[in-house]
Length: 131
Length: 131
Image (cartoon, rainbow over all chains, first blue to last red; front, side, top):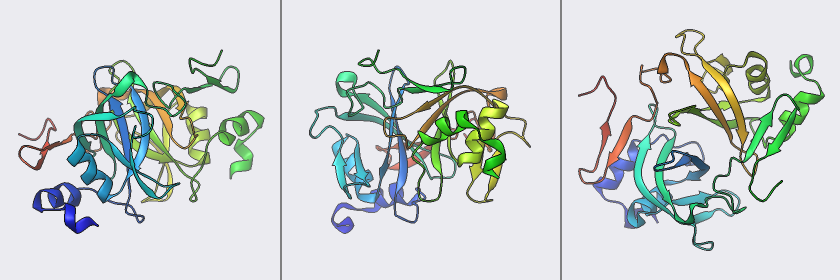
């Protein structure tokens, strides 16, 4: 499957990434403008190539073991403005425009709506739907 | 090793986390104020407990297989202002104050100084030391 999509450009892109032993790399999606961290997901080589081709985030779902064009069902796609890589090549940072401002499958802006309250020794749910 | 550190509070903290099959969870460090994503690292249970105890980020280095109090050698510690968890509990987001503004072992502010330039089909090194 890889061969048909790749060319020398793609290999330059792909070769800089340190893929784990499952052929995956963790990907942080951060919103352009607000700089909010929206979510963390995973990509394999095909997912990164598809992300490049579409200009929208395509991840690899480990639970369903398939490519996942984020928002393909919900409509909450992520337009990729920038792809960044860390110093040892084992994490990708995507700068995205989040369609409708909703990244999380729960309907929240960000997936990180649980905050540890050390005074109360509990996780506080800061989602808008939770009072 | 775990027993001596834990109490019911800690278990509440720990139990909300979905640890992977190596007992680890990916952790994103984001700078308070700028909202810059500084780095991504890993924690095991002990690392998270130590982070709570010290109020500074303690990770688990997979390469050296030990706890790593970030900045213990460089001085570039991370004061933890907030611990957040994502919707499925498998990623932690730390909001930190980065000592000296330097998170990366290369001396850069953030580890994510490589940017993919699709027009040039190359990774551009945006580190301050690289012209």
